Amino acid sequence: MGEVSKLTGLAPHVLRNWEKTYPQLKPKKNSAGNRAYREEEVNLIFKIKELVEVKRFTSDGVKKVLNGENQPASASNSVSADMKKDLTEMKVFLNQLLEKL
Image (tube, rainbow, N blue to C red):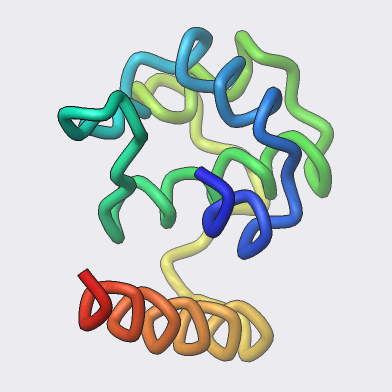
């Protein structure tokens, strides 16, 4: 959880809260009980973060978007250059983390 917390800029308690709030975010836990986030889950965290911090969605609004019920008006299928850069950096980080495991 520490690595994902640093990567996303979110406190661990926020990540734990989001796991309770958004059923789509369910990282597996290893035998020691530590969370093992997959790339898809990290991407979901970034999506939730954007909806909450940038677009100012409420928890209910985020749930609707994640369930496909309410797409934000400004949503598009294109990814901004900044987001592509962030995603590329995240992919490199996750691949390095995977190599260490």
